[in-house]
Length: 251
Image 1 (cartoon, rainbow, N blue to C red):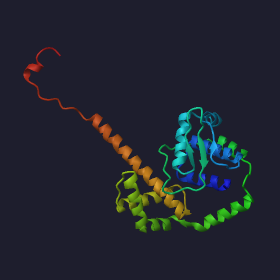
Image 2 (image 1 turned 135 degrees about the vertical axis):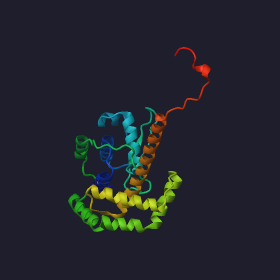
Image 3 (image 1 turned 180 degrees about the vertical axis):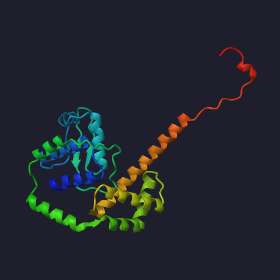
Image 4 (image 1 turned 90 degrees about the vertical axis):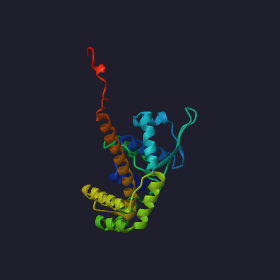
């Protein structure tokens, strides 16, 4: 595995969807452990030990590792009490359709901890780091396109849109039309432009649009449910007409 590519991909996706502080700390800690074991997967790490090292609770750790798994950065097998510790595997490639957004976003990144862990990583399996970095940057720039061109490609790709509609309908029970997809594509690229992004690789943008779309739809559903619940609570209750006898006596 190439450590530079793993960390670069991690921060690239963070530009679109920030991580929680625990997600950042956990991922870099696992990179540190994997590198120390010369990338022999899976790596076994007791939950209590990880919590102590990255200064977090078990609840936050469980949530963070699930989010990293959904976004395609790691896979793991839960442990069995104190007898068998969980095992973790660093994923080298990210599958666009298997990546899911974490529901809760946080801008509080644990920079000191991530920097500390990064500095502990010795350069196993990294050759000519500077040359690899330059080559990767050059290749990335060659494959990038402007946002207007990318928006046109995604809007015209009806078969790709149909695949998204079918996938969301079967797995998430979200019914969308092509018109709605096109509106979401327009909103997505407006978001990228506002964020200061000018150029990106087409494959990368398609992946992030799928993730962004799912998150947006889920949030819209939650907001609609909360609004409906608030309206129901505020609705007055009608008092049925009673006979005159029921009004007699003291109140």
